[in-house]
Image (cartoon, rainbow, N blue to C red; front, top):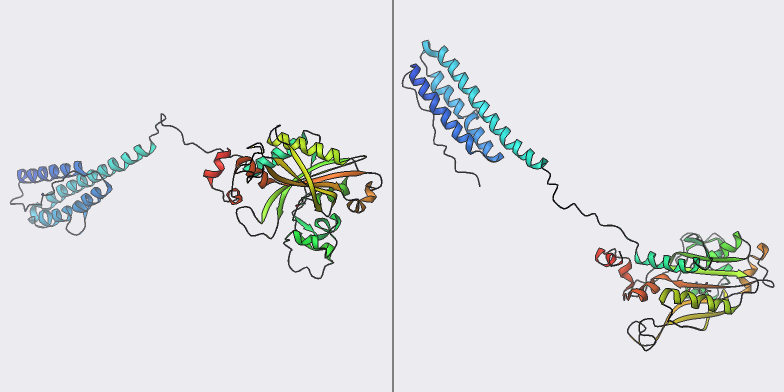
Length: 371
Ligand code: DAH
């Protein structure tokens, strides 16, 4: 708090203009000035102080001018004028000094650096749990000699559906609520663009680019016209797999996926394959793993069932090979298997997350648990 400043000094009228009287008046003024200057602490104090002494209207310097100089008898005017000027300069210097003291003080405290204070922590970024899970899955297959592929998120109807044995107007298309790009009615259906509904189109793209043998996993983002809720998101991620060679059998598929699930969830888990349908595989299967949490007894994670359904797979349908036959994929000579899994679903199981939306909200409190 600013100290109480006495501002009782007023400019007296001079009774005479003797040297003694002038000296006394000057001494009084100077001591009042110094006392007030000493009490100035803040910018606001300083403004008041400066106004009191320098204001054109009724500031102390103006009063000196009126009361001491103008009132002086003519013969003393010259001498008094010089003396008043010296006083003015003295006042101005005091005011500048005070200004320097208070702003200088602010400067010093702003410049002061306390090197013993702890530094500002910059939070380290970390892999998003979805990306981390996707990488974990991909790494399991890389360790088995698979390469890693990618493909476009905006796909043609041909790659997303037709070449995967979804014929035009076939009801199997309805299982994938597709987001089509508008205004393409004039194009042939197979050229129309859409947001890929799965990573499976990269199977065909890979086989177009390289002859067999193929062992590839394809991580990526996919889109479906789904309303967001605790288990659905219109944007999510998948990891696709494809192996094509001579004599690939369903045993290879089972062995590969059983190993992958054990690598991801622990060597105690068992896998179960049961019949399913996908247009691009024949036969097709869904794969469930025994609950890694309760060992199959039934718990919250497996919804009391003891098994968690995690992926789709099957032997590549010969109709699919027909589309890439020219590149060495003669369905009479080669065979293969494919699989596809949802990354969010696997991450939700692994980390016991019950709302898929948590992955997309960017809440640091959620994300930093995976750092
Ligand atoms: N593409 C399928 C889907 O999104 C998943 C899938 C099933 C992929 C079986 C495969 C497969 O490669 O063989 O539902």
